[in-house]
Image (cartoon, rainbow, N blue to C red; front, top):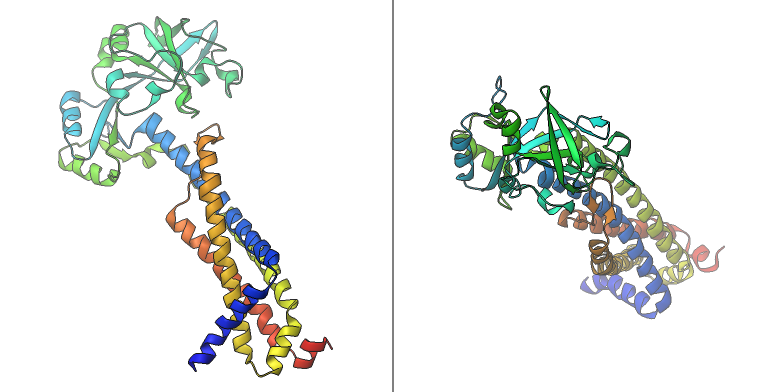
Length: 400
């Protein structure tokens, strides 16, 4: 009995050992191509989703987003609340922000964009806007007549939303900020580009500037954004904040993302669809490879049956052979993907209007797609090999 169970492995080994080496290499190569095709699109969409999420967190909302209690327009007792937040375990930094209901005007070009009054020192500990200055400089706490604006506000050649911009405002230009009927001339100190349209359609002034225009506005923020420690779940930090007495509305960045969360959900749906198509392509490719291989061995299978080899031993040997092809394809495909494609796209990411996307493949996705390739290979070998072993022996040998 033990000898009989070894026969399929023996036959599979002999097939691989005595077969044409170029055919073997080509088969493994095609398996690898099918595997890379399966994981590439998935990893690309994962990269877009991951890049978009990081843009939301790093340039807009932080990990946690705090707004006033229901019925209130501002967060009162700012200093005590900030101290409580920053003393909470899992919090790395926090920054109060004041949404300023103002418009901006430059050379008769006027528009309403999101203008935020901030403490620059606190803000740069939560967001990375300070690191994205493409011209000029970031704000300093003592600035009282300066403003920094996003690329989409500044406008100019190549700007996606130039039609609704200030049509080429530059560092050193004076823009007029209109707030509650009051006009204040501010100097553009810097222009930033985060490659995230929502953030690049924002402008920032200091709390000192806002206090100069309307002092009462600068006392209490209407949002506080919080950066959490890497690896700490936002939900756990929110529970601790509430335990520590923060009674304001507290949201995770996903909840605060709004429209962008629906965009990432759309990418997820597309990713699932693309993955399904990839599986179909891989299945058809592998089936054709193995089917052609088995059909070319029909006479050999007939001879094996004629000398008394049981059918289940024959098709089991082909299943083992197909499994060997698929394992070889997964290994080669993994080497190409992680050794060539991932490093290349880390150096040369896909430049999109919302982020620079790299390839991101989770362990779960990798295992699932590797298993898919292997199962498809096994089924692709099983169907034609069973069909051949059920045909008449003479027909298999002589084709009649």
